Image (cartoon, rainbow, N blue to C red; front, side, top):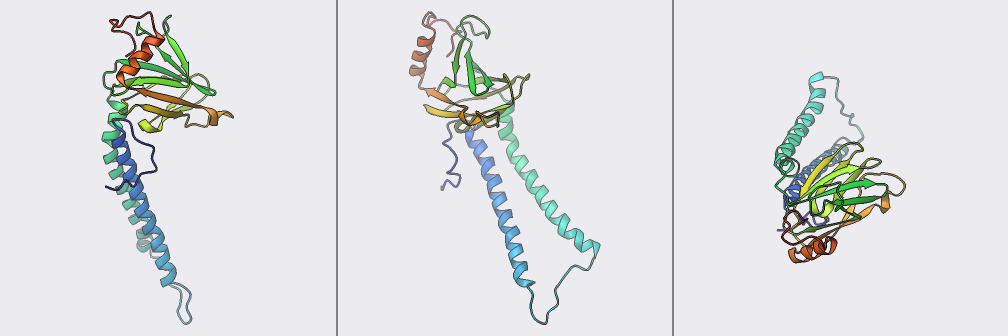
Length: 235
């Protein structure tokens, strides 16, 4: 099957296919409607062009005919919008409404102009002595759900992980959440998708998705005092 949405970055998320299908539907509906609209304009330009000996055709003020040119397109657009909403609702529920149990929770704070990433450490609690902070980098294992706690420390930011098909605004004074499960190891971009100041273009972190053994090695490197039997260490 031809991938008509090939300009999208590679999908490495379990729910990315659902999101892409909604984008594809919006794309094709918009493209077909665009062609119909411009095609109609083109046909009318040819049919009703100025010609010698022929009077121009115009609507003579009949309310019903005038209303038809407005109400029929509105009804078609409304039906298409409802169709997109109906098809997109399951994807929205999966991404925003159904958080699976996660062994790893990460707190990300947007700041001008970097991502402040905090891991809770072996005790599993934020705000304690074993927390570890990283700037502009997130490390996660492949194939495991990860929970995100998102907030902003100054202005409105937008946490964007294009390869995960995840995007969430971060508003000062408000905690938001999200989750993802990466399906392929690699390094992926984490730009800010909200114009947040003069250094906005430089605000770009990295998501490192590790194979299980590699992630365990990274955890041991960060918390060397924690034992492998400690079930609360970040996994």
